[in-house]
Length: 145
Image (cartoon, rainbow, N blue to C red; front, side):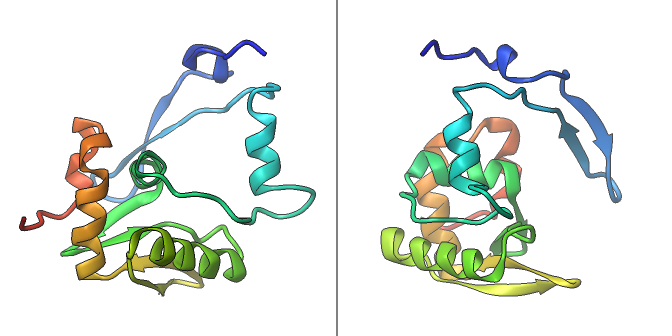
């Protein structure tokens, strides 16, 4: 199977969209490609979005954070509101078992998301530091060595 280039993965160019305050989000639509099908099946299978067992590498954590992460003071949040509760608890378990990162579920309006503890944030930041794009480093709180 030929590996698609990033340009081949999307059917629309990225477009900036203003959110709350100064927040800017980029939106795009991916194509239906055989190379992406395993990822679709991993998270959607035949039902709603869910997490099965997976390995969270440093790169996986960094990409996840750059896409769905934010900071609040000295803690990090992973916006998992669209996952069911079981999947969110599974993600918390995987973070703890695979990387020793402690966290909890935090209520965000009517949904829950993952809040990584302050101590866990320090560990998380050290793990992902070498993989974050410079433009997205602002999302991490300053941590002490």
